[in-house]
Amino acid sequence: MTYSSFSQNDIRVKDSVVVLSEHQAREVIKDLVRYDALKLISKELENRIDIMSEKEQLLQQRIASKDSIIDIQKEQVRIQDEVINAKPLIKLNGFVGVQTSQVSLSDPTLYFQTEVNINKLTLGARVFIQPNNPGGYGFIAEYKIF
Image (cartoon, rainbow, N blue to C red; front, top):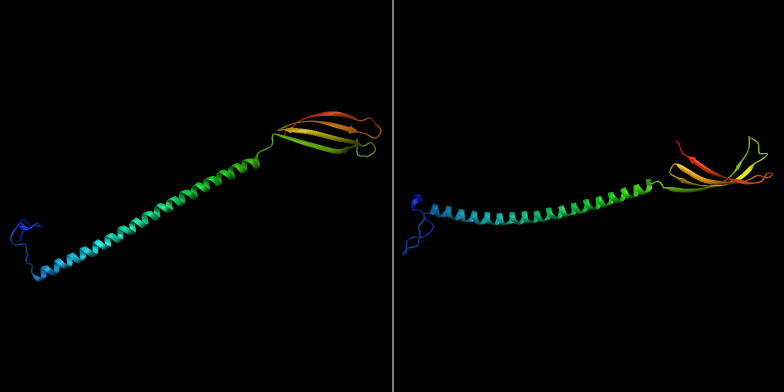
Protein backbone atom coordinates (compact mmCIF):
# COMPACT_ATOMS: atom_id res chain seq x y z
CA MET A 1 0.00 0.00 0.00
CA THR A 2 1.44 3.36 -0.99
CA TYR A 3 0.44 6.82 0.01
CA SER A 4 -1.20 7.44 -3.32
CA SER A 5 -3.53 4.51 -2.81
CA PHE A 6 -4.46 5.37 0.80
CA SER A 7 -7.63 7.40 1.33
CA GLN A 8 -10.04 8.05 4.14
CA ASN A 9 -13.01 8.02 1.83
CA ASP A 10 -14.15 4.68 0.53
CA ILE A 11 -14.22 4.89 -3.21
CA ARG A 12 -15.60 1.43 -3.72
CA VAL A 13 -19.37 1.39 -3.83
CA LYS A 14 -20.06 -2.30 -3.36
CA ASP A 15 -17.66 -3.29 -0.67
CA SER A 16 -16.95 -1.01 2.29
CA VAL A 17 -15.07 -3.52 4.41
CA VAL A 18 -11.34 -3.07 4.94
CA VAL A 19 -9.47 -6.14 5.96
CA LEU A 20 -6.63 -5.62 8.45
CA SER A 21 -4.15 -8.02 9.85
CA GLU A 22 -4.18 -8.70 13.60
CA HIS A 23 -1.08 -6.58 14.13
CA GLN A 24 -2.61 -3.66 12.18
CA ALA A 25 -5.88 -3.99 14.08
CA ARG A 26 -4.02 -3.86 17.40
CA GLU A 27 -2.13 -0.75 16.30
CA VAL A 28 -5.36 0.94 15.17
CA ILE A 29 -7.02 0.13 18.51
CA LYS A 30 -3.99 1.45 20.41
CA ASP A 31 -4.10 4.66 18.38
CA LEU A 32 -7.84 5.09 18.98
CA VAL A 33 -7.47 4.49 22.73
CA ARG A 34 -4.51 6.86 22.92
CA TYR A 35 -6.43 9.47 20.93
CA ASP A 36 -9.43 9.19 23.28
CA ALA A 37 -7.17 9.41 26.33
CA LEU A 38 -5.27 12.37 24.88
CA LYS A 39 -8.57 14.04 24.06
CA LEU A 40 -9.70 13.64 27.69
CA ILE A 41 -6.34 14.86 29.01
CA SER A 42 -6.45 17.82 26.63
CA LYS A 43 -9.98 18.71 27.77
CA GLU A 44 -8.93 18.46 31.44
CA LEU A 45 -5.87 20.63 30.82
CA GLU A 46 -7.99 23.24 29.02
CA ASN A 47 -10.36 23.29 32.01
CA ARG A 48 -7.40 23.76 34.35
CA ILE A 49 -6.04 26.56 32.18
CA ASP A 50 -9.45 28.27 32.23
CA ILE A 51 -9.63 27.96 36.02
CA MET A 52 -6.09 29.31 36.41
CA SER A 53 -6.89 32.20 34.06
CA GLU A 54 -9.96 33.08 36.14
CA LYS A 55 -7.89 32.90 39.33
CA GLU A 56 -5.21 35.10 37.76
CA GLN A 57 -7.80 37.70 36.75
CA LEU A 58 -9.31 37.63 40.25
CA LEU A 59 -5.84 38.03 41.76
CA GLN A 60 -5.06 40.96 39.46
CA GLN A 61 -8.36 42.61 40.45
CA ARG A 62 -7.52 42.15 44.13
CA ILE A 63 -4.04 43.55 43.64
CA ALA A 64 -5.46 46.54 41.76
CA SER A 65 -8.02 47.22 44.50
CA LYS A 66 -5.34 46.90 47.20
CA ASP A 67 -3.09 49.27 45.25
CA SER A 68 -5.91 51.80 44.98
CA ILE A 69 -6.58 51.51 48.73
CA ILE A 70 -2.87 52.02 49.45
CA ASP A 71 -2.80 55.06 47.15
CA ILE A 72 -5.84 56.54 48.92
CA GLN A 73 -4.24 55.93 52.32
CA LYS A 74 -0.97 57.52 51.17
CA GLU A 75 -2.92 60.56 49.99
CA GLN A 76 -4.72 60.77 53.34
CA VAL A 77 -1.41 60.52 55.23
CA ARG A 78 0.07 63.24 53.00
CA ILE A 79 -2.90 65.53 53.68
CA GLN A 80 -2.69 64.84 57.43
CA ASP A 81 1.04 65.62 57.38
CA GLU A 82 0.30 68.89 55.61
CA VAL A 83 -2.30 69.76 58.25
CA ILE A 84 0.03 68.82 61.10
CA ASN A 85 2.99 70.71 59.65
CA ALA A 86 0.98 73.73 58.51
CA LYS A 87 1.87 76.86 60.40
CA PRO A 88 -1.03 79.08 61.37
CA LEU A 89 -0.89 82.40 59.61
CA ILE A 90 -2.17 84.41 62.56
CA LYS A 91 -1.56 83.55 66.23
CA LEU A 92 -3.04 85.48 69.16
CA ASN A 93 -1.15 85.60 72.47
CA GLY A 94 -1.94 87.17 75.84
CA PHE A 95 0.42 87.65 78.79
CA VAL A 96 0.29 88.89 82.36
CA GLY A 97 3.58 89.63 84.10
CA VAL A 98 5.64 91.69 86.50
CA GLN A 99 8.51 93.87 85.40
CA THR A 100 11.10 95.39 87.72
CA SER A 101 13.67 98.03 87.19
CA GLN A 102 17.00 96.60 88.18
CA VAL A 103 17.15 93.42 90.25
CA SER A 104 15.00 94.52 93.20
CA LEU A 105 11.27 94.24 93.72
CA SER A 106 10.94 97.79 95.12
CA ASP A 107 8.91 99.32 92.28
CA PRO A 108 7.32 96.44 90.34
CA THR A 109 5.18 97.09 87.30
CA LEU A 110 2.24 94.81 86.66
CA TYR A 111 1.42 94.55 82.99
CA PHE A 112 -1.04 92.88 80.67
CA GLN A 113 0.09 92.32 77.10
CA THR A 114 -1.76 91.05 74.07
CA GLU A 115 -0.22 90.48 70.67
CA VAL A 116 -0.89 89.03 67.25
CA ASN A 117 1.81 87.04 65.46
CA ILE A 118 1.64 87.17 61.67
CA ASN A 119 4.50 85.02 60.37
CA LYS A 120 7.62 86.96 61.48
CA LEU A 121 5.80 90.16 62.44
CA THR A 122 4.34 90.70 65.94
CA LEU A 123 1.91 93.54 66.69
CA GLY A 124 0.36 94.17 70.09
CA ALA A 125 -0.41 96.43 73.03
CA ARG A 126 0.66 96.55 76.67
CA VAL A 127 -1.19 98.04 79.64
CA PHE A 128 0.82 98.51 82.82
CA ILE A 129 0.09 99.50 86.40
CA GLN A 130 2.55 100.64 89.07
CA PRO A 131 1.62 100.91 92.75
CA ASN A 132 2.93 104.49 93.28
CA ASN A 133 2.85 105.82 89.71
CA PRO A 134 0.01 106.29 87.24
CA GLY A 135 -0.61 103.43 84.79
CA GLY A 136 -0.16 103.62 81.09
CA TYR A 137 -0.17 101.73 77.84
CA GLY A 138 2.06 101.13 74.88
CA PHE A 139 2.14 99.51 71.48
CA ILE A 140 4.42 96.69 70.42
CA ALA A 141 5.84 96.09 66.96
CA GLU A 142 8.45 93.35 66.55
CA TYR A 143 10.05 91.59 63.59
CA LYS A 144 11.65 88.19 64.13
CA ILE A 145 15.17 88.08 62.71
CA PHE A 146 16.17 84.54 63.70
